[in-house]
Image (cartoon, rainbow, N blue to C red):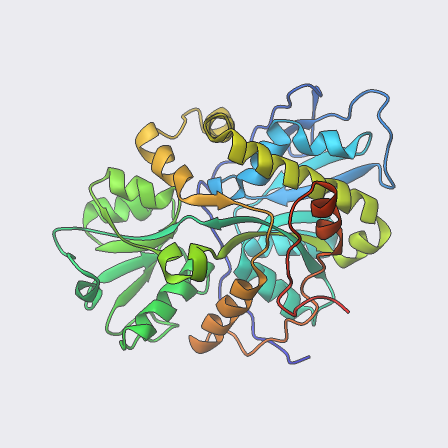
Length: 369
């Protein structure tokens, strides 16, 4: 397997990153994890699986709502029976990968860039992608007074969350497709790519220090609330308007030792996505309530409504788009060409999908032997 140079930064989708998450269960009681979060307690008398607990990790943001809602509504815990969830939230992809490597978490919801980076840095030995979670939720939003068309982006200052993160790679690739030149490391060139933490991007926009941003939700909708306009939805650049934004990963050690627990989490994820899609308003309120419990302030309707609509929750990991995203990183000069063979193991997910009467999904030839 060829060695890969890590992306300079893989802080994928750090939307609402400063918020740790208060999670309350419905119907299962709750207990505190070591970091003070509330997670559903196992139902009294429920059968324990092969592990006493499963440690899961995710970001407290809308594109990780499968985990956020699944934990809060007790949908994941219900499938785990007497095996207890221990939940942790993360602000950035690298820290979640480190936690997976250290055994601090067993299963995580994470974006494509850190999943690619984590897999290639370990020469394919530390993780597997075992399921999908979400697609979409990324937009190019701009100051309509300065940018009226896509060609007007040339010469302007556009923010991305961080050098080498998923949105940064996507924007660099889009710039290249316009025939423009930008040095990936410095961000200087025909477009000034300004790496800006999502938490401060709205203030940077209001101050005029950036002219727009290629960012995930709800940051994009926050900017629109400040007067920006959506110039491009990244979904429009992909076949069928779908591209992976959140995967489910598991440590290979945990997958080998506790496949029944992994299967239960995947079953809970599938049922959570089904509930979200059947009850979008309730699911949106559930996610927003969790964020409000943390920050003391829910996202306003003008932000969460368009943000929520732009994210698609699905079980398919959209494997072919992960491979394409890796190619974009290589093209930008941020990643040596990786060997992603074996990054997926969709055996348990497809078992769950078949049992639920749903279509199985494909690993695009990148499955484990």
